[in-house]
Length: 86
Image (cartoon, rainbow, N blue to C red; front, side, top):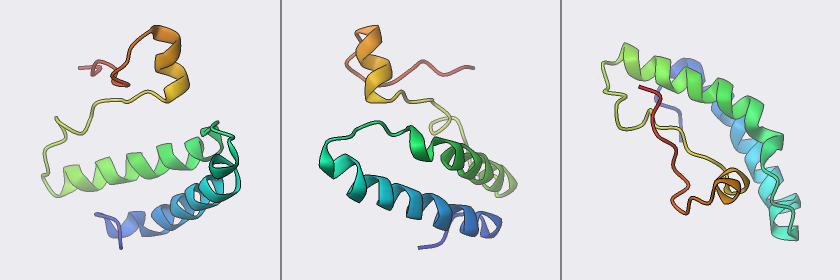
């Protein structure tokens, strides 16, 4: 499946490959540190947000930041959701 923005397709492929490798080689073996793909995810996420703005798709609901399991375990939150930086 392609990304919402044509310019983001290559980034999506790179992130998908990273995630799939992390999932099969690390997560399924009990290693839950998901930081390996974080840099490419941020770049891809920025590209998707830009494409959505260009297509006049409202970002309000998807612009919320979500924490990783390790981040919200440290804060005592069980929702895994941070407040939006609006």
